[in-house]
Length: 356
Image (cartoon, rainbow, N blue to C red; front, side, top):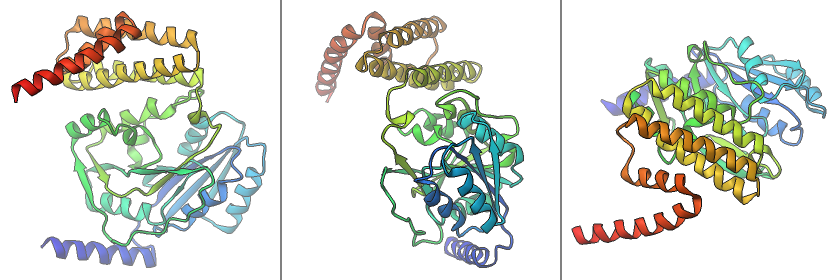
């Protein structure tokens, strides 16, 4: 029975690929700013999708290079492409501008220095078409070098493997080791309704940190694909590749907002969020110290102590003993934490050996 179902999906997928009939339109929003070196690879990877019913929205965010002219040229050759020219307002403002005019039943984002596999939207939309209670589809992403120009072809299998996460599973995975999959906006396909009340914060770096958890929390079900379809370019000198004090504090503020959001939810959900967020604050503290940004490091530490004291006072259940020891020792000092945790892990390892 399962094989018959898969064959039907394969047949339907091939029929849609050839005819375009029965596809629900996907609005793909692409903010564009000073990326003329990478823009063609990005746009072509979207144009060449095996899924044909696309609305490609290129948002020229006041770019002062050849990008505006390139966007207009793409629009002349492909009726599916719409171009917005606007004053520079940042990535969030550009994405929001795209959302305002998007008409597709599904919404997707692609950053203009990245590119996608040719069958990305065919595979992701197939899941939502066949499972009406899946509101978001997520795919892994692959990091590629700045000079990468490899054109990823479509996969060999017509049906891509995936697993379905219900609400509790989504919340847990949002704060596990692969939490980056759930933070970024560009590796997702969402039903249009998910973005009805949500917009990106203008003027903030790490804008995804402020938004995607709200989308995922409200989703009835989330599908996680096994195959990476998105190719994330690692550019030297980009905001994400270097330490940026504003970006660091924007991320900290997003973590603060996220904890406030989950504080009103179930206790175990709040515990998951608080544990990961506090750990991430320590990570930012160490980065600030590494780059000798003392004021930023001190500001992070002050916020950490305030948050951890409040959480301890609330006596929420669900934060592990190991994390509690880690946070308590860091609250004393970073030097004490490094010394104490080294001894703590050795002692814990010895206890485990004795139990065996």
